[in-house]
Length: 227
Image (cartoon, rainbow, N blue to C red; front, side, top):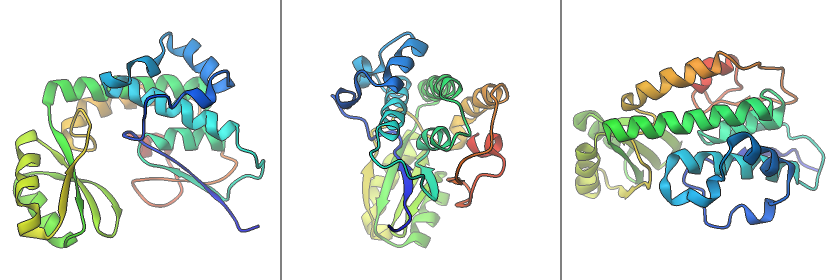
């Protein structure tokens, strides 16, 4: 059998009814007890509910996998890093879920205060997209793959990037359904809250490497890498 890797999704992957296959699972039962509320009942209210919901389903899916063989590596898209670290045994579930809930609340609060948004630039010239971002004061928040960059920042700047994307870069712009300028300087208050929460949790050696979004290499300093 060829080696396998485990990849966990991030925000934006939620859907109504996503919890149904996992009702009664250890992850959901324990998760709802820890949270004290059901995030699946409030998915339409944004980040503070969507992130815990996605995390719970990710861990539940991992625990219900049919093959017990461990992957050679794992990764997660932003929020998905937390599920990947739980799967590897670096984070305990009971520590990770409160972290995810605090992360979600901090990001939601920062978004409500500062506003902002994100836009995916599909296709086009990466150099021209980066130049456009610099001109408009936007951050290149995600370099997902060749031909797919995500820009983040002030609402007006995101709208301007959408308007001129095709003409100036050849890219197709798609606004992301998020409630803030994630992975940009506008999230600095959220990063400070998350750093304080991360300082309180125990980290253990992992059963397999987890690759960091920031470095594209296995985590070395998990606390720093998650901030």
